[in-house]
Image 1 (cartoon, rainbow over the protein chains, first blue to last red):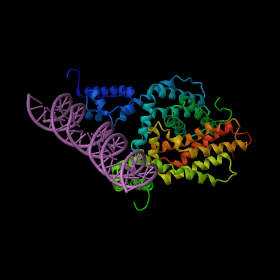
Image 2: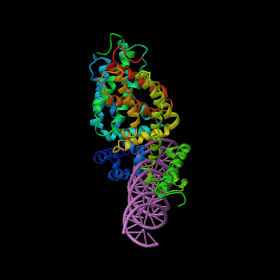
Image 3: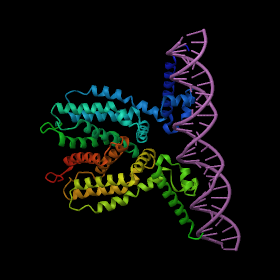
Image 4: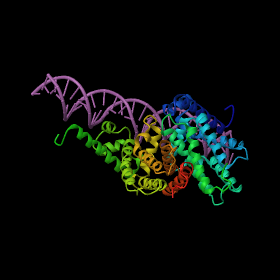
Length: 208
Length: 208
DNA sequence: ATTATATATAGACTATAGTCTAAGACTGCG
DNA sequence: CGCAGTCTTAGACTATAGTCTATATATAAT
């Protein structure tokens, strides 16, 4: 072949499948696109598709993982001097905006479905590493700064805070089109953080 | 026919399909049972099955709806004199216990999957009417008793409180077998209620 | 260079959820 | 009683996700 070894050929095939699939999903919706259609339009085959992706969901899951880059970048530009609570609120705001306007509802729906199916691989625990690390970092920082008490468990609080995300995102799909993601996520996490600060916040330092 | 009119015959067929399916699901798990197997073991047919149930999920969804009876009965036996917060905590405890030990994880998983698929029918808004009415009732009562401020919106708070349930239940499935449903649900709703009481609780009356 | 091995891909094949049509059986009405 | 209309059911059929096997080609070993 002109331009390279087998490995890079395979990578090209994967990219072609990936991009074609995303186009089709965007155009017609995930459920309205068949794997046969994807491989045909990619001049490829089922064998190639399932060699590169674990399932039809695999396409969207791979796209979803790009969110890690977003998180890293987004959190990097939050001013240092904001309080813990403000930082978490900003994280939610940025995240929900990204999910709604960049990744889209159809993608998130399939990601959430696959989270319920692949009980083996523990999807969210593997795939949202970056998010969890960031949230744990914010909590650790808040403890260091004396905003949170030393007996706050960063690991456990990370699960609880991100559970607010998952609960809100689930409802986004389960309830019709009247659901205002930004508004609902803000109301929910605000109340939750109030509770969290009430219990673990250091008196006199409670998030401004 | 010997024992009745057409309508009751149909009802019998439905019952037979329903019970056979539940048995098979229990024995082998939802994903390991095919509709063909259900109809065969029920001495029935695909036509009958899909005449009575909207989909394979329909079986578990119908079973799930029995939870309404549980809610009504369970809430009826909570002592009147408990505080709002205590009542909500008891509701969570009873609910999670019922879901884990009576309905089971496999059933709940399929219910949550179908909540993500049938965007049209607004599954949770239709099917959990009883739960929502109960929670709204508790909030209304708390307002009447002066535990919650008059500007608390029962409708909106009901969504938020039940979102705590959905978030916890989603995580129950998404995270492996190490997830302790009772413990996690309690920690989550306690913090959330703290926040809620902080904002909407009437000073001096904050849930004992 | 020759042979052996591993990898990527093509596409036939399987499993299965759900649709569709026809036929049988009950019901109500003249 | 008999006909028309309606509901229920049987089961063939369709659509489609995912598996499996054979083949071809690149890479590694001698």
